[in-house]
Image (cartoon, rainbow, N blue to C red; front, side, top):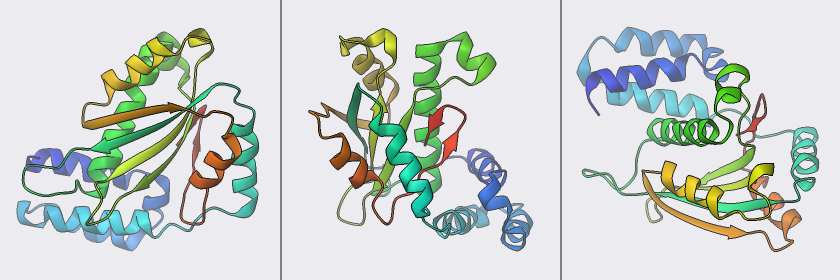
Length: 199
C-alpha cells in the first residue's frame, strides 16, 4: 500500500467507536502519522487496540445464537486471503478493510438502492482465523437473501465475484446450524451488530 492508503486505513480505524474510546493511544497514533516511516507502527498499534476489545458477554452470545438459529437458509463460507507479495499475511487492518469492502459490494449487488438509502445489508456472522502457519481466513455464516431461495447458485456467484483477495469455499449447512454457530461464537470470537448486518 502507498503511504496515503495506509493513512486512510488508519483514519478509518480511528473513527470506529471501540477504538476511539482509547483516547491516549489514538492521540499517539495521530501524532506519529505525519512521517511515512511510522505508518507501519501506527497500523500495529491500531490493530493492538482492536484486538484488546473484550470478548462477548454470555447475553450477547445468546442473542447472536438465537438470531442465527432462525435462518432457514444459510451458507457456511470460508474466505481465504492470498499471500501478499512481500509477506505471508496481510495486517489486521488490511484484512478488516477488505472484508468490509466485500460486505459492502455484496450488499450493494443484492439490495441496490435499499443498501444506499437505508443500509439494508446481507446478514452474516464472521470469525477470523490464521497464524504464522495458516493463512488468514474468515469463516462466515451468511443468510441467503429471500430472492435467491431455493436456488442459491446466483448468490454463491456473487460471493465469489466480490471476494477478490483470495479463495472462496462455500458449503451448505446440512442442518448443522447449532454446531456452526457454536464454532463461530466460541470464547475468542467477536460479533457486532450494525443495522441489519451482523459482523
